[in-house]
Image 1 (cartoon, rainbow, N blue to C red):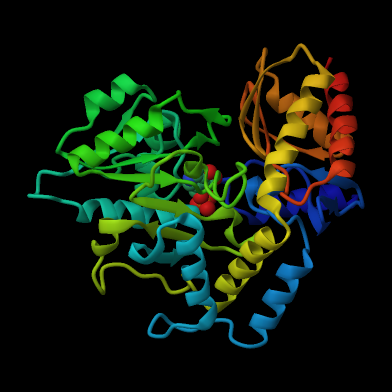
Image 2 (image 1 turned 180 degrees about the vertical axis):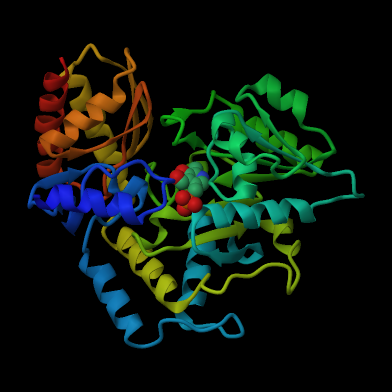
Length: 396
Ligand code: PLP
């Protein structure tokens, strides 16, 4: 029995059946590459699904985590620590929430959404503000509250009944106009629907959502778990527009792979929670927040937000130059890219890419998602061209 058969069997025998069998057993990473247990090298253009912003084993993250774990890894929420306050203040600065803003730390995206749902429940008005809106085809997480918001019936149905008061509306201006009134507590939106295949919203959608929620006293909560932290070419995708949300949910890229999530509130939304209404044992502990400071600090120091924009442009050019008839659409922004395919063969294409030594994924049958680390340069881009071309050729 070789090592591949061995770990597959062990996985099947030990891990909960909630995941499909894994694609490979990865043992090591460096920069934009990872290696499997058999020594095969892969170019990682998925980055843990938009998490490993600095790539793998980046010295800034390694040093910060090593130093913090050797100093103070965890304290209870009866106490604060310097890295926690530093990260909260940093998030208020880079989101633009500023002095009127506040940060709640948790450990994952779905927990950030749970905190946002509780925020929405606190926006009750005279008691009639009970509805929470999200979009058809959205993804907000797998815990029961965020699953209720997730706009994919197939994911929700096995676990119903879920949270009452949630409605999924179409991503159209008409649907916004029709749904938003004084009974809406919050509208929760991804600026780009990542899990749905990197789908952009229609022109003017977010701006109109902002106007209507403000007009009716509803919170506009942006789920930037996938689009945030530099990936789309600005710190946060909403910063490409001329407005602020009431709340922002972040996770994935903040700490480069160390689990963390955050709910950032703006303005009046910052006054909704009172002491004792929410909490988390691990959320905001010094280890995770030191990792967050290291990652966000390095993104700033190395100009990686600008790089996300540049490498996104280069990737779009390379895909266009490859010129496969299978690829009919290039979606997304910056270094979050969705390729629309003319046939439902995305899983086969991702598998062919993996065989060629390239990691991308197939969020749905006719879309490929590309989300490389933000550190990627010309050498890795040319390697992508070669490997992706091989994968496309293998498929045809
Ligand atoms: N929201 C969005 C937009 C996501 O992409 C994800 C994860 O893919 C989540 C929420 C859930 O985050 P987590 O898996 O950290 O709970």
